[in-house]
Image 1 (tube, rainbow, N blue to C red):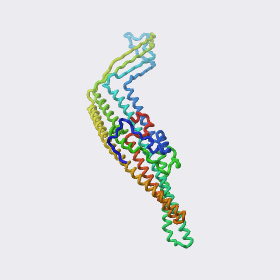
Image 2: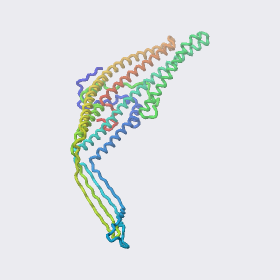
Image 3: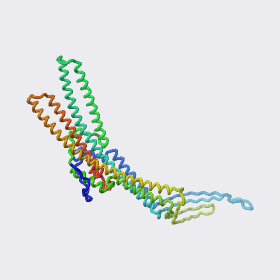
Image 4: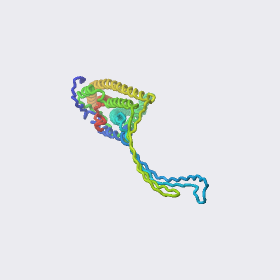
Length: 458
């Protein structure tokens, strides 16, 4: 199986990998991956991040919309003033204090609207839109990474389960042989000192089995916690790893696709491209900090009052309107605008370099993954051939045991060899599937992303 990286024409068509992923042959794994989208703690946090950025977008959008305020009040005013003494002095009955009382409601409405800010507000809204897109891409990237981890840990559980079976079988045989030795000791055919080694070996095997069981139980708990489910059903974990069912040419097609599309074929590449655009808009906003900016304002007010004095009662009503254009111009800000521009340009150069590094890194990784798939496929052919030979040998030994020409120990030994070879086959199958998943995920072609809105992925 040889992969050729050049000359694979995709003509813009995505490479189909449906049916080749581990969950396509493992229904319980597929359920776990689907459940993790809504229940995994990691995905819940990523979803909250999207909501937070959507909330920030409202603040940015509000800057280009009119601001309207309404106010109302009702006031009572009392004014007491001493009357100046006339030249001839106060006469009997003259008022010496003047008291004025007034009351009435006041209500009004005001409006303000920025009318020209050199597109600073428009660019700020675009920045908030980019922040939401980045959060959505991070959500998709988090789910892709989570799905890969779930696959890896679930396949690891399959291998651990097979290893436990083998270890338990070997422990049972050790126990059987120890029981025979104990019987020989009772019959006097064996000295007590000769049992020290077998007893110690059996105790060590039991301890190793207990440790293996503990690791396996904790692995199931970790997988359940990662997926956000209560537990992993033991019966759902098979004793055999699925076969790799992808078209061998698909690996070369995926590599060619990445070479054609570059880093932006990956989710991280799309995020980097958005950050470059973000820094460009930030620079444009920083350039306007020392430019004059203008806004429109308008207001309307209604005032009704009643005025009571010592000698009269009067009522007054007034309605006023005002509108105008105002401008503000920061002439010097201590070089803060210059610093903001330099920082934005530096960020742009940083993300451009990060994007170049990502392109080279992912290109190397996908080529290495494709080559690893070829090596793993060749290894699988070898171990499966070896297993066929071990199975044939076991069948022969069983036939000779039934004819009485071989002992049970020969059958036990051959069975143990078959179990060990089963584990070897599963290990290589898991390695092959893992390499394939790695390649599919690296180029952004993971089928789990189809469960997300299209804008999250493209």
